[in-house]
Image 1 (tube, rainbow, N blue to C red):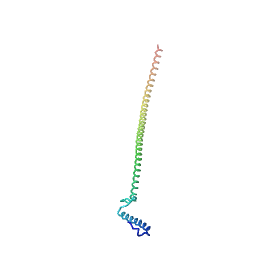
Image 2: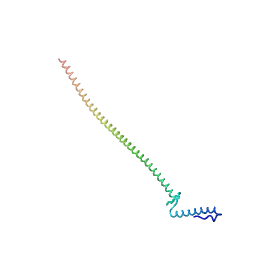
Image 3: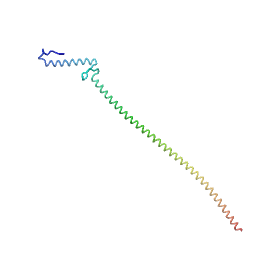
Image 4: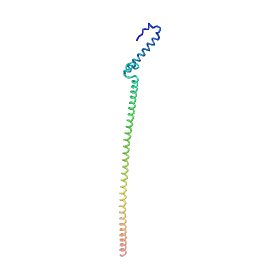
Length: 160
């Protein structure tokens, strides 16, 4: 909108202000009517469908979401590593548990073997004691027989 300023020369400085104010009012009115229609101007005066504030908030939210997803990914990597470590420790613990059970069973087996050996040795000792008693009885019987024979020999020699 241009105004002929040659006719209003005494008011020329005020006219420029009026023109600028008029343009600003016209621009504001145009922006308001476009805003009501759902169209907005961004900081580069490009026409946008979204309100610049909403667009900026959307961009910020998108960035925050990206950061959140990155953090979640890092967290999942850490948790995955922890789970792997715990699984490895569980396997090692299970192996050590099996070794301990095997060692305990071996000790029980050795203990039972010793008990069996001890019982065998007690039986052998009892058998040997019985054999010793028989030998002692036999020895005593043989000593008696020897004594009788020696007495017989002595009597036989004395009779001759």
